[in-house]
Image 1 (cartoon, rainbow, N blue to C red):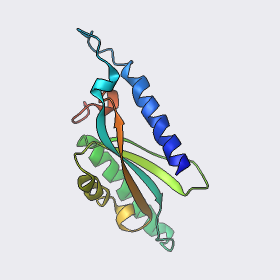
Image 2: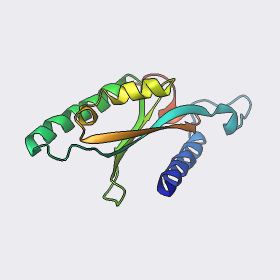
Image 3: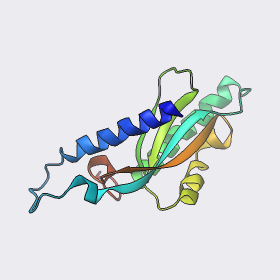
Image 4: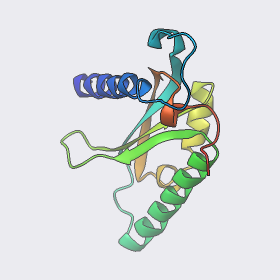
Length: 142
């Protein structure tokens, strides 16, 4: 849990730092970052209970996992994703979703083939940052 809190704090700091890098338009009045904080959903992907899948099945499931990541990104739901390096916690990767409720985040997680097959499991918690840069609402620009 200590590692999860530290990791969450790091991502929050990154969000704050990225706020100052948005130079698309000059601001009329400088707004405080804390007035723009929005809730997202941080999804910690961990090793799932299915440890018996053969390598051919895993390859297919992880290709579907990657296809789902692309789909969610294009829909503007997935704001960040990526794997972790080897670690003692069985952490495999993370997602940050832009959706309204925990139930919606849980439903989105279940669209992932690797999670549905039990290769990965997900822990979901609210996460907050300013909605700037990759965290802007809506779909990404083509």
